[in-house]
Image (tube, rainbow, N blue to C red; front, side, top):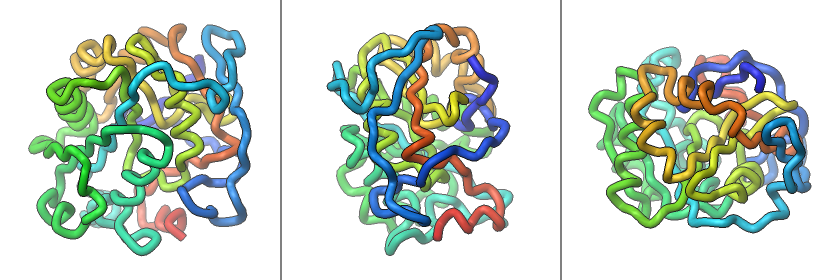
Length: 251
């Protein structure tokens, strides 16, 4: 497995531009996202294309949107305007359009303001991470706890709020691998990224290993041979919005 480690579930990766157009529920900048099966790889073998296989279980969506945007001058990313709404609302719609349900959202910085300004969160289960400043590991734990309390899901697909180039098609490809023992992640040119999918049987161990900004890095490293990589570089871009210069990804 490569050393590409997505934030929120396993720390900040070394960035490598993804190939293909961005997918975001509408036509992305530079042209329409391409469709296709998206070959998946696990244990060095090619698995059936995720986009062509039906999901084997009920897959919930988990959106991590608690950060305070320190490098954006203290602007929470959830509150960034995007396509006539807020970035957090866009990400929720991406999860829903990709077939995930129910959708749980973890808020933190300015949580009440986000709730007031984001009517698109209606129908979501919203959990607040009071310790959001400690890093995304704590938000992952809060989200998994919320899912466990709600019950009914066989797996969860985790998405970060600050990656608008990841759209419904990439979500659907990874979601297709949903099962109670599943462990899957989108890949970009063969390098692991977001979204990431965890079967329900794995949640306790993932939560126990989540710490600081490293999230599930330790868990994924310990189980790397079990991770199914689902290529999404032809339909999505994994660029993060971390600094003012990254706001260009919101065009």
